Image 1: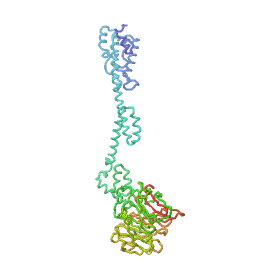
Image 2: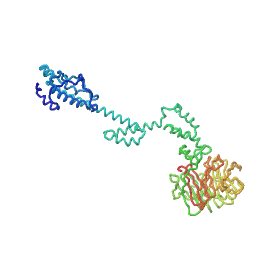
Image 3: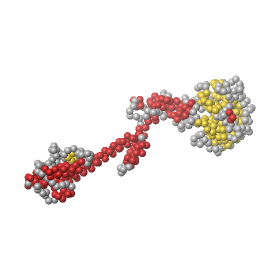
Image 4: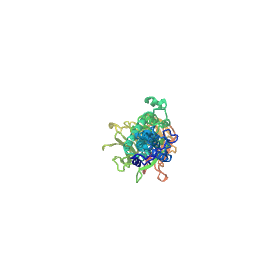
Length: 544
């Protein structure tokens, strides 16, 4: 056996190899190594080469000369880190020129492979360095794959933003520089979602690709339920079906939706769709009751609404209060006080910055809201129970069983235009928005219907029967289809539809020990206010 060349032992010590004769290649290898180990991609190149080399050296000691002289010591260190396969380089190339020189000098040494140990070790070191670089490159590719997979997973969870935001910090906390990128990506997703909600759907029936004007015309024939179902299809249709033009026809046919019989919108600041929703509560009688004000002694209060203010009479005074934003509560300190009658104020209305009041002294008073101007004139032989004013015309009803028409013009105040014999005590009266007729509610003491509509020629047009023959103390209309009446017992408020003869709903606001008439009713599209002897009640139809 020939000893290894000088310096080979030192190289072997650095590389961790045992010096010995080069073993023959593995059986059936044909110049290539077997499949990679279980270490996975990027792990089997360097470590596997070392294990194979040590095994060859150990077997070479036992075989001693049985090899055929083909040194392939450095071959295993060269391969692709991604696949774990050795490269096609031969052992002779890996061993270097020193192996060739040794083989020419001594054929037996070439057979034993001892002359190529140092160069083979150098080849192994180079192979290890190459495999390490390839392994790092493979790890980088693997990391990029995992990062791309995480991004795709996060985009899939974009429909659940809450969960994505909670998991984002945990999934990306250990990756530097991703916080800003995540925020930018989240902002982009929100903008994209906003654009999608405002844009038409790309796919779907050809009907949605029609011009919006034509779609509005088609959808205007749908009823309320069909529009509600259509709004559940996609975000764009939900926005499209919220257009006021689609709901105006439905709102005009609904109860207390803010539209008059002529189609005038009295509440342009509130979306029509929202008003139609609240209108269903009026139709079904769904509401919540509460008390706004209480009095220590019995009163015969009357009230009016104007913007965010409430005007209510107590004894011979009229007080003004301001509503809080919810519309179901008041600021307790009054804004103003108006006086002028000798007895209790039975009734008053607001018209053209004026307060027109009717008193138990048989007089009608005219007050300016923003000044101290007050005018009173005698109107009836007995107390004036009710009064109304529209379009420069005042109508009044009295206990003397008459209804009278008066002008509001300053130069003609106190001049009676018409006197109508109602054959019964008049407790409530209201002028039609068309200014062509007015309605009266009487005491139901004779053989006449208590609720009658009169035109200016004093002719009855239509009538309704009160279910319990109770006296109607007050009446209020939405200017379209809804009528609200207050009876004389148990504080009963009734809702009527002008298109039907039967009562829709009844709301008793007092019990038997505290039975009280309903002296006044006022309503908005969301609330109904009822004034009784001791309390001011509110029925909330927006939040039943």
